[in-house]
Image (tube, rainbow, N blue to C red; front, side, top):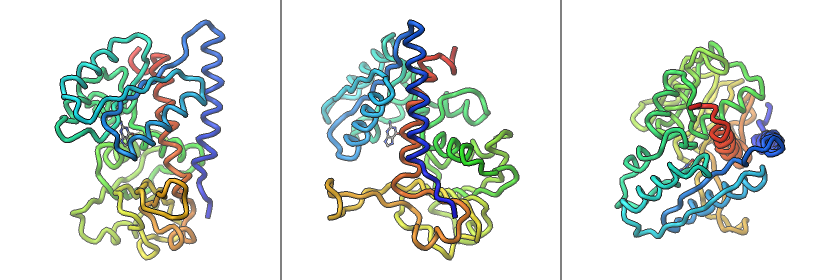
Length: 293
Ligand code: GUN
């Protein structure tokens, strides 16, 4: 069994990004700049956004954090997005989700200029991803594909079973792995909460991607010998062993499943760090105008 080290791989990629930023600056260019909009004070969102800002500092990007109160009217958020769309200093930006209930999430996402949508959530980027065009790919699927590529894991002709159908992980990773390219060329099955007998399907898989946010869901009896198992779950559960009072729990019962695998990602230290680094890669692409010219 090979443990896929997302933390180490993400650290390597950060060094590559930092080297590229130095090259841009040495050539007289401006440093890439990522902005994040945070509405309200949700604990998990706060910590995700703080990590994103810290990541920017580490690779030499500029960053801005725009904090808006929980009761911000929808129109005020749309106005903030419109300003970021036209601000030439900002190469890319994200609006941290979830948003408070009185704000229509999709309306906000649709108001983002696709050429600055480094989350890859705008329908234009999602559509371009589906048909294999250059686009900003959402960070978690992009991170999974990057890890698969860097570990030289064969995907062509393999059966990939994805558990979860979210717009930001399940659906886009299904589209990416079905593309006619490498990594890709998979036969893809997408399972979800209405799929009867998920185990019958996972037992036919070469690659299993668990992305439904149900801690410990994928157990040993559901995994064939030699499978590649990618755990996207990051449920925050209470813990008295950590300073924060929380720890992250994946969708895979790691202890039981790992001995059966050819490759497996841990939680933490697997897909999470790769998701964070994908946002940096998208911001670099935005700054270099690689996607939209
Ligand atoms: N909330 C949880 N994950 C994400 C993410 O990748 N981007 C944004 N904008 N919000 C999130």
